[in-house]
Image (cartoon, rainbow over all chains, first blue to last red):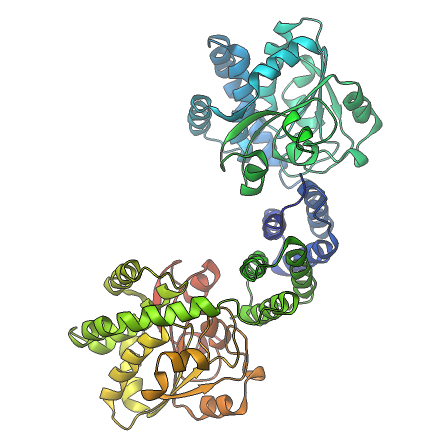
Amino acid sequence: MKTYLDCIPCFFKLGLKAARLSNADETVQKRVINEIAREVAKFPLTCAPPEMGQFIYSTVRKYTGLLDPYLEIKKKSNETALKLYPQMKRRADSSADPLFTAAKLAVAGNVIDYGIPESVDIEKDILSLLDSDFAASDYEEFTEALKKYNSILYIADNAGEIVFHMILIEEMKKISPDMEITVAVRGAPVINDATMEDAKACGLQDVVKVIQNGDDAPGIILAHCAKEFLDAFTKAGLIISKGQGNFETLNGKEKNIFFLFKAKCSCVAQEAGVQLGDICLVSNRRWLTKA
Amino acid sequence: MKTYLDCIPCFFKLGLKAARLSNADETVQKRVINEIAREVAKFPLTCAPPEMGQFIYSTVRKYTGLLDPYLEIKKKSNETALKLYPQMKRRADSSADPLFTAAKLAVAGNVIDYGIPESVDIEKDILSLLDSDFAASDYEEFTEALKKYNSILYIADNAGEIVFHMILIEEMKKISPDMEITVAVRGAPVINDATMEDAKACGLQDVVKVIQNGDDAPGIILAHCAKEFLDAFTKAGLIISKGQGNFETLNGKEKNIFFLFKAKCSCVAQEAGVQLGDICLVSNRRWLTKA
């Protein structure tokens, strides 16, 4: 996805939010804004928004010296998700179509985004999301693809919700026991995206192979990724991409990808042809045929 | 008022909105964004937001060649306001405190901002605003000042609503028949701000002396203003300043000013100590004593 002009005001909002979360004073906040402004002036709209995202978060780190302002939030998210896991696992298992419920759970896990400690509210939000339909769905094509391809790369998004991906991965494995699944997390902290530390904290490696992508963009910028990730990306017959940032950077790339995400901004909603707040399970074919 | 860091994302939104209103294509919109970005990188927060506003609108004009994209909107606003005038004049005259009602009408006229032709809806919005109280009010001090000072400069804001200012001006004149009132409009078009053309279209000169400020900022930047305006500003015992842009540029200046405005953005609301959407009639003394 290219950068929409309406993404630009948002870049400054993101920068301010991140700088403030890192306890930057007003002078430092303005320095961050100035750097973003200089970068925006030369940023081509053909780049995906997370390329600017990477610049923004690295600039905030540079000026505040704080490597991982979301560390505590991520820890809490992991704890909350682990607490909710048994209940959500039972809910998927006992549903009419456990794979479908698990796919929805993988998106619904997104509500843990801000690691609110009141798991009761989060539970309510997740259950309400489970009740809503995918606004855009290629679920049948997705199940067919799972039957066809054995080598799967699953690109994770946030800390916390990665716990819920385990439920989907367990359902996928039931389709074909010799399915080879690799989960990719970020190579270094950026916002509340899952890193290897989060995967470890959630016990993801006990269920599936976990690799790092070698980069700290809030999406997948292939040109920045490590060889291990690129090999897995090339080799995979099927890629499951969770989250907005991964969708923004991968839609239209020549690969067999299914995107699972909630449209949390109007530009992404427009790109996906859905409404703000809708959840999607869509095939990359939608963008490949457009091109 | 200094520029808040949260004004910065808004600068880009304003630029996009103005460029789109001028039918700029995406390439031109990005050029406008790039210019704003370069300016933001060197813009000191000590400047008032309308100083950037002036840059934004002049940049849009430069790249689109369109001098006055709001021309039609302003014409419609003037027509709508003139149609509503007799009814609103009666409403003020028949109220318990005509001056107070007229002051509220001067702010309520702001709902004609976008020149929606359905005057029924506008009428409803105006009447609803008349029912609400000033969230911040120095009305008693205002009436005292009107009794005390004979030379008054009234700084107008938008086209259309200038018609309603006539009602307030007529009420003010009842306090002292030899009151000398001058209304100042912008020296050249910027957004939907009133210019001499709008004053003429509304017959403002038949009621009061009208001058131009010699500038096209969406506020009053004294350093840019013409001598005629500066003389009137210096000479005036009392200044009435209508609208957000004039408030943003004049609050805290060493003059006896009363600000009449609706807080249409969260930064101005914060500066005025009110909530978003609140209407205010406040003395500049609030900022002079703070300094």
